[in-house]
Length: 494
Image (cartoon, rainbow, N blue to C red):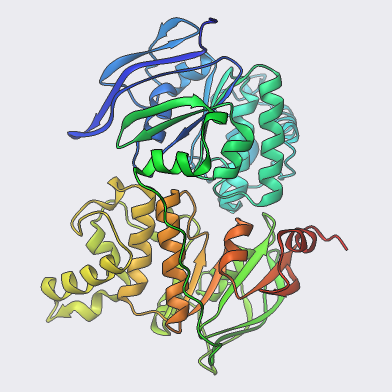
């Protein structure tokens, strides 16, 4: 048998006494696309970071083409041909796309940065993956999906022989994901070995040659993809069968809770008008850059440049700041939970009461007993698998998302804006979140749902609004909506 490109032997990693990986051993064949699957917190990302030099294993060894390796830093890993596309994005947000794509290797001319060469290299790297992002834009001005595309371009452009993709499509739309799938095929044809971490079953079975399953930090199985069925893979991942999702039917359309008219923001979107009624789940679909998240932020008072009119419960309102939105009963689950939805250094309990802390204040002191009771009820409703006093930064992605949602349950928000609510969440947690969304609608909440996963929109939304280039281009009812019809509207096809 040929020597595997990567060999893990007895990898163990602990964080402050908590075992993230325990005695993990398996091989990855050269030139293959090898999936690593498991629930949130199973150790998938940790294993990738150990290989990429971000973490150092406490025990065990790694071989690259039969040679033992030890990378003290990601720079050393990259020099050896190992690159990683991280799920949690890390950039210098004040610098341009071109600057970020050449960090650590800035082209120079006469002792100064060669800006022409810098720009040309950025265009080349982005073109290689079919991206059309302006290299002169700052990273902070890009959406999460666009930042993900830039990160992919940087890893592929490094010429690595091993690339670790950690949830690379979690924030990409259908079109961008299809471009990535084509790129993965091209990399395989060039002999590049790929470790592919994903929660999306269809892409795992379509792209990957072999699958390794981790559960609770331990190796469960490694075998060819053909040896798994989807049900069997889920069973290996979560240790039980995943029950069919019993989605509660939304209640009859009730009173109008939100009306947006002629909402606009220069360079982002224009002439946006829609309404959301009690008992409705209104989906918002569109390609990356269509303006979905920007509209959500404007409605929640996060865009000072936005113009237009908003009415809540039939009354015109002015939302200039998120505190105005919270006062009106609006809750917002943002696309990037770690930057916009949570304070990672605080406890789960503290995060869950941030918008409502005044209601638990007594004479300038926080009523801990009342706070704990309210938070406990919210955590129970979202089935949080962590204690209220746990550090939110140490939780898995699924549990972090549940804390963000519990925050708006505690606030008793009946008008919810959910932007990519299941991004980076495993199949078990995703099913729980889907059921929760449907239940809230059945209870009479009005929900605006933004998602890059068309099956999620098709399965939950009572009607779907389609955006393209910052404008509303169509509306489909639940009976009319199909994946093909949505893609055609999103792409501007007849």
